[in-house]
Length: 334
Ligand code: SF4
Image 1 (cartoon, helix red, strand yellow):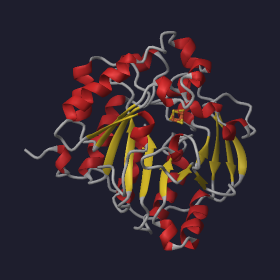
Image 2 (cartoon, helix red, strand yellow):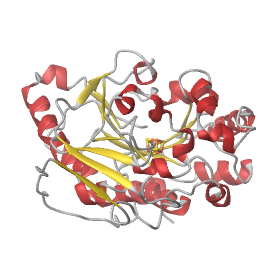
Image 3 (cartoon, helix red, strand yellow):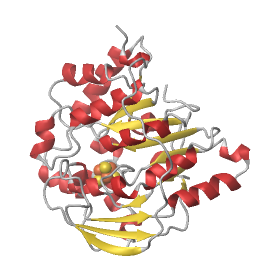
Image 4 (cartoon, rainbow, N blue to C red):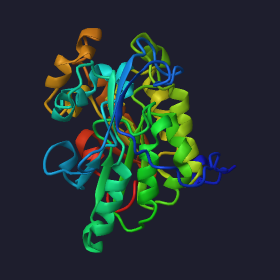
């Protein structure tokens, strides 16, 4: 029987053709149409600002993404703010503490306002086309560290899709990580297939759907496992980030599911190791109030140790926190 890791299963998603660019600049307030009701619990209100950005590739000179051994050169965020902020991950999301959100001009709470960078793809196309090939070949881009490229608004605005269409015109970049927790990413598999340096990185912080639901929900875990499996079936490189590792059903259950997911790489992170300041941001976050025992992250370390032991002798690489995120060598999640 062919294994999923062999990439022999039929690719389930095919989409074709370029989509028109969004050019309108304006301000709109929306409710249920802005978000996908099936994955969001609670208040559905959302402010949406359509705005042209001045630049799209943000150089990484220090901080999380600039760490060794394989630092990212740039991040790319097609949105400011994130609709998933209304779900469980919004409770601990460190992006709500960063300057680009604070200075965005929104007065709404994190998760309730998003700026759409309507000209992101045009800026990207210009940046890549005017760059010398030697410089372009060194690009290692993380999309995205402060928003989810496939948050619910992407279904309508398709800014991430437009950016992938631009990347698909270039075969010579070093790495593009597409970091998401959204099953919507499957819509763009046909584009990711055309980008040899693309790696789909899917957040699966726990295998316990009941736990997520008890907090503020989020994209269904089964859909996320499916996303990884289907990406591999399409021949797309994939990794899973257990970031941050939340309480799980059992180490064998979660660990084995991760190992058998088809992902090339598994990264485990904790709330103290991964928020950039030893847990200080998490301590100020709504998650600390919702889960008073959050400082005990021993379950994350146990999972990492288990995966390391079990993956020994396989082709699956296991990473921890920052070194794991920045542990991808040239052009490959392998
Ligand atoms: S999806 Fe990512 S960026 Fe968006 S709220 Fe959740 S953790 Fe933050």
